Every structure is written in structure tokens, then in C-alpha cells.
Image 1: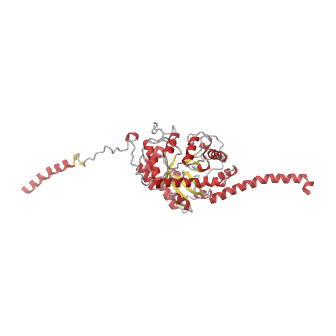
Image 2 (image 1 turned 45 degrees about the vertical axis):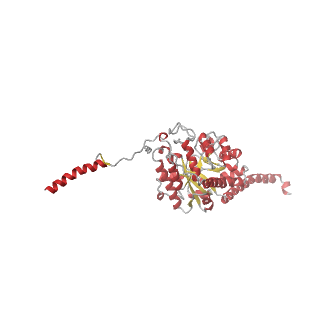
Image 3 (image 1 turned 120 degrees about the vertical axis):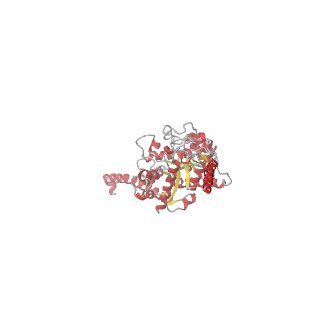
Amino acid sequence: MEMKRNPTKLLLWLMFLSDSVPFTYEKSMREQAIKLMQDTRLIDGHNDFVLRLRIFYQNRLSKVNLREINKTHTNLAKLEAGYVGAQFWSVYVLCSAQNKDAVRLTLEQIDVVKRMCNSYEELELVTTSQGISDSKKIACLIGIEGGHSIDSSLATLRMYYDLGVRYMTLTHSCNTPWSESSSKGIHNFYPSVTGLTAFGQEVVKEMNRLGMLIDLSHTSYSTAKDALHISKAPVIFSHSAAFSVCNHSRNVRDDILQQLKRNRGIIMVTFNADVLACGREAVNISTLADHFDYIKKIAGPESIGIGGDYDGVERFPEGLEDVSKYPYLIEELLRRGWSETELKAVLRENFLRVFREVEKVRNSSGLMDVGESEILHKEVQNSCRLDLHNYRIETISSFGFSSVAQSFSLTLVIVPYLILYYES
């Protein structure tokens, strides 16, 4: 009654309510996002942290505390704050290593991931979908970023699998002798390659046989189309976004998104600001969420995951500056009407389904022959590469003589010496 008699008090009360309701709503959304991520911890498809360990510390883990390192977007404390349950660590090596020492450098990056995961109790190296599901720690997985790391060798690909690698990005920002990159004008390797060559198709088939995920981020439109046509298992884009939202060459066109849906694969959306906003300065969480909304419309929520690309690029949306910030994206998607069921799929379940199906294809391929195809020597422009097809076993020579001539010459020396010895 007093309120009715005092309009000023009533107005002040209504103003207070109007200010507090949005605050309460925001708090509720954030709490809902955090609770959701506590129950369904994120599987992130791409992180370049180990590249930074090489750059800053030359892979000397004894020189750095990974729980507290502050030079990077990633550390263990931030991963836990971001509710990351599993992380694919990229073992990327520079495209400039192609035709040189890319294999050695890749092995060194695999080594540092394994040492890192063995050195910290928060981490656990896993190699299967079940391993991710069973892990009570941050599950560590290994992904090769760029087909130049296999040096055009199926045997090298198999050895990487044995070492624990579970996906390979077919290209990075350079063509390989057998696959075309989406990036043009950065490197001049193999400019005439379009899509997948015959050997590139064999790489895809061998990855299916092994149970290694095929990653199409960084690949050209033609390469992605070829791989989706050939692969018997679902594929992934480990860190890409929607071309129709930002027409960057790294992003995925609508027809490929539709083909991905039919393939039952996923696109793990990147947080790379340049790929999200095509060079616009103002990039925020809403910019990223627009890509999620668009891909959901074209390919459905079952085709989406998250691949932040932290420590791989310099610029991220405002509010998503490091790996602790993932809950803010989930909060924004809740605000846009995404259901908890859809977000659980995006956070974790979609990737686990894809990984299980890749393993299922592997298990059903038991009778398939191991890939023994070799790339044609003329297709690899590398003077350091031996052509062993016409290799002829040569006799061991010494002092310019063959082994037979050498034996004969020794006889000519020794016999006269013995005759002189016994006659004296």
C-alpha cells in the first residue's frame, strides 16, 4: 500500500529490478555453462603448445614449469580452468623443412609430447577412444599437422601410428608431392599438384586401414572433396570455420559441409580471429558463435566440435584469449538457444563417435593388405632422395680396386716375398 502511495519509491524499485534481472540471468547462464562442462569435459582438436616449447625452450622441459608458464596461451592450470578433458597436441614442423629434415623434426615433437605427458601427473597419453573415455586426467593425443612430415612414405606413416599419432592433417600451408594446400603464394612447393594425386589417394586408404583420423584443415577444396569421396571412415577438420561467414581460403564451403554431414565427420571450429572475421579488427565471442550457428544450420549440431588452435596463431576473439576461456563460448551458445544435449555433443560426444567409427573401419579392414605403394621418383623434387629402384649392389672396393682385383694384387705381392724369404 505504501508503494502505491509513493510513486517515487515504486519507480526506484522497478529500476532496481530491471538492473538486477540481467545480472541474475547472466550469472545463471555462466553457472549453467560451467556445470555442463564439469559433466562433459571438452575434447579440443588442435593446440600448438609444443611448437612454443621448441621455440622458447628448445624442447628442454627441465627449463620450464608447464603448470605456470605465462609466455603461452596454454598451461596446465589454464587447461583445468577451461574444463579441457582431452587435447590433441599438434606436432607441427615448418613447411620449410619439407624435403629436408621434416621427419626428424616431427619425431622430436612426438618425443616432447610423450615426455610432457609422462612428466606431469595431470596428463595422460592415450591412443584410443576408450582411453579418452576412461581417463580421469587431461588425456593427451598426438596429431601431425602437414603431410610433409611423412616424406611421401607410407612406411613412415605407419611408424608414426605405432608411436601414437592418431590424426594427420593432409597439408599445412604448402603443397606436398601428393596433396594440394588451401594456401597459395606462401611456399612454392609442387605448384602443379591439384587435389589428391594417385599416391595421395593411397595415403587416405592407408590411414583408413590404420585407424588414423584424416584431418582436412588447411587442405584445398579439391583435396577435401577427393578425400571425402575416397575415405570409408568419417573425417575431421581439426581447426577450421565456415566459408560463408568469412570467405577465407582456410574455411569450409557449404557443399563440403554437406558432404561432411553425409560422411558423419565433424568440423572442429577454430578460434583464430583472422579466419573468423576476415581481417576485421573487432572480433569477439559473438563473431565465433556466428560460425557455430551457421554450421549448425548447414550440417547439423552432430557435425561440430571445437579446435581452438591456441598457441598456433597470435589473435583470438576478445574474451577468448587463452585456454581457460572455453566456458564463455558455451555460455554464449546457451544464450543463443543451443540445448544442453547439442552442447554435450559439440564438447565431446561428436568427436568420440567419429573416433569410434574410425576404429571400427580399422577393425573391419583386418584383411586389407598393408599399403606398399611408392610415390614415383619423378614426382618428388628432392636431390637428397635416393632412387633405389635401379640400385645395383656394387662390390666393395679399396684403393680403387674391386675386391677380386684387390685379392689378386695381394697375391702378386705376397708370393714373391715368400720365395725370397725361403731362399735366403
